[in-house]
Length: 368
Length: 65
Image 1 (cartoon, each protein chain N blue to C red):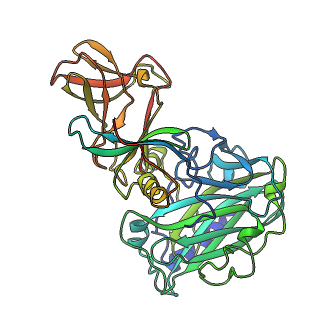
Image 2 (spheres, chains in turn blue, orange; image 1 turned 120 degrees about the vertical axis):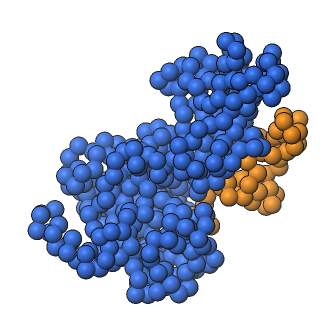
Image 3 (cartoon, rainbow over the protein chains, first blue to last red; image 1 turned 90 degrees about the horizontal axis):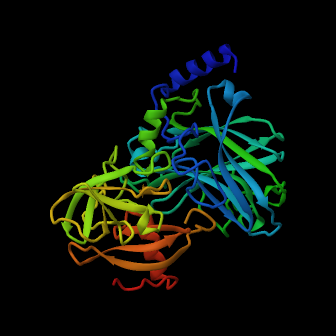
């Protein structure tokens, strides 16, 4: 982007009052990937705050390093990739990546979502190995679900900046709470089961006959080894796409940790997960020091092997005899976990740790 | 439902009793292949999905030990 173009955009954004508007999307630069960098599974697996949905096909999702091209020159070092590893010509096939925004983050953003003269703007970089016209969707979640969609054309293997300005609508409901408020859904492929002429390209609509978009002319889902890449996802209040609001990795990670906090023993086989006490001789509880309040009381995920974890108390290591689980006293402010053992000293202080394995981890997940 | 399908595989679901209170407080399950314990609060999306599947007759939760 030329400097003149940047200044012109800034001037326009200033007039539109959106310069001070933050990026409501979290991890839009795809820099944080607490769970890992590649996965053949669907859902939240790699880049934080992005969840992959697929049907009838197989897709590997990954975080990739970006080393050249227009988004790299705009300051991005990572992108999110969907790679087709098993094709299908089935009409019910689909591939999508979704970013969900907490309702209170929209409700308090300054966007008057009830007004048709108040706007938000979505922007992102996209690249596909298969040229064609693709779609991005915004939808609400509270009350009746409303959809707003935009088409964008991609040339093969070429990064393209997509922008999508959306007006409010008196029918929209977005609560001031910790549920889903808006979803941004970028769609490489929907089969004809999910497309048709009922999807409006010019106004908010409710779903008719499961038709989210017009028919896709190309078929990414039936193209072997097809790839689709995204980075620089931003949603801001105002009707102009301003330059991406870059932030430090630490600030970005902290915003992600409201939804996921992972402690991993990969680099240290005696990693400590939390401190606590033995309230009986046969179990202990540990308090996990989450860096930020989580969105909700989190799900606890662990390896499934009790022996991967141990209590360290009174200079003794007590191997866990049951898997670590979330405790009844857990909250979004202080997750508490427990695990059975034997031979502990009643009321002794204790530490939950990896039992000499780099496989152990604890994941506290408050996704939406 | 804002996806054509929300692909959540939940298997081997079982209620958990907290050893301190002896009250059922969570559900242990394999969720998309991961070993999870899920607090029984509705703003936890895993529990909301577990409850939806139970209400729809798609999932049965084994009693706690």
